Image 1 (cartoon, rainbow, N blue to C red):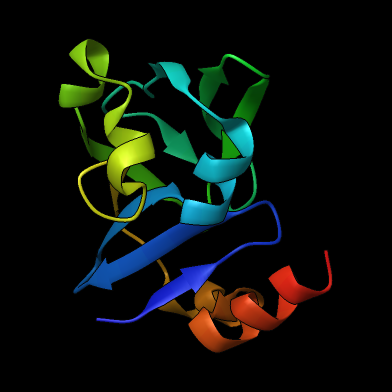
Image 2 (cartoon, rainbow, N blue to C red; image 1 turned 90 degrees about the vertical axis):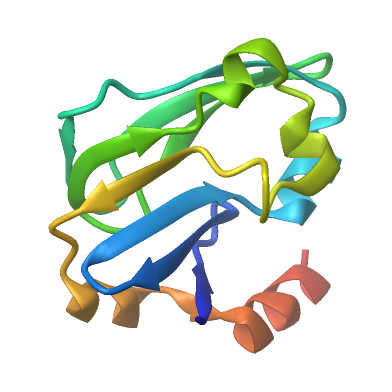
Length: 123
């Protein structure tokens, strides 16, 4: 399964019509120690690039934007008790939510891993 990235450092990984969303390892590193993740409500519908959730760290608070449009089908409840999971594996156990009803055509507006790596080099 391929991951796609936004310029705001979110990632999305498709599995059929369901997408798993989180922030990139780069974003987690830049934020520092994550202290709180405001998870979206199950059933919330979002459009591509709209605010989806929020994340707080010892350094800053940031919105997390939806890399694709969809409806929140599941959230990572483990982050309520252990927001540091994002620091430990932002692109694995630190995922934020799962969206359903995703339009794969929207992936064209995102970067693949190679393009994202190039983008990071320019920051």
